[in-house]
Image (cartoon, rainbow, N blue to C red; front, side, top):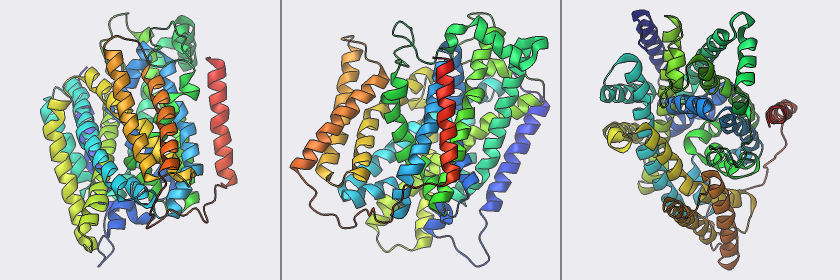
Length: 525
């Protein structure tokens, strides 16, 4: 598939407009200078629509669009559990987690850990997240984002990596989180519009005179096995989505870690001007997540009927369906793909700058001025981007291996992260010794299970491994906390004034999400 001149023109117009908009929303009032709160938390004044859109823009990138679309082609609709269960997770985060964070004026996740447990855990986790974001997340977004650009335009992958990195850096360099969040509504609108266009045209081609609904009916009748939401143990893909575990097992641990305690995700909620505003943004994001399978999974399902068996290569489902689009629309959908890459990359770079500046530099150089901290944040963003550009190809050489590497690496730490935060928020007797035990045991147990599986000793689905490791790490953290109680807590986390009561609108939105999930799982069980 190649792009025509008009498609490239559309892409260029998008790039110019989104860059200009980012600089416009980043402008300072006359005589004002940016403070660290302005730069890293958008002056704590983000509106709900920016919070919701930015959450999705930070989440969705090229590897997810292309990878999940191909999973839809190979596995089927069951892969949508990652998206649909995330919607319910967001509701939980909005109701129970954000009120605690906002009541305690939390800027970063490591800061919460210091106030709850002590400085050791803050430093350890800040360093961990920086390594993860730079060497795993940034490099994967750059390289896996460059792959479809190379496929669709012929541009050299290294050149694509450099262009993506420098554009995302410049895009958020001046305004910080404000530049990212206030333009993400445009990015998400383009992403949703492009996704709906490709789904509409693909289903229309399948349905013929019967149209889009006829196309979907054809898919469900010709490929009924692809519409099983809960896979049975005899399914060849059970190891990826182990049956009921997607509803009550390890997927919850992965989702809670990602949506509740991940700096570049939760940072949008922390930048809200109030708890109700943050919760409205969370509810908006939850409904966008319900829509995501139409955009990222349906094209893969459509490829089953559009192409001959065996004609769709590895991770080629989405690009091949894109190839069916007419000139002009192809450029719009391609611009949506690039928008997803840029938005996600800019979000991660900004969060790297936030953690480095506030959790490491400001702690080591106490008394630094606000303008100096903003400068340090910008320098950190530049350094992180340059490292990502240099390391992208060596670390992320193969698309398939890279995706598995990301899942395996983060899965080592995910159970421990959920343990230390959940105990820190909801159990007063949790101690630093207990938290460190849970975090360390999570890595050790995960590595042990991974090694046993690599030797062929047994087959243990990744999602189940996460659930088992979480339970064991949680029990160990509780026992150690009882044996070695917390000694000091210089700036304690307060629970006074924290209310879990939510507005009628939020409650209705939550019930809507639950009703939707019950319906889809009941229909396609």
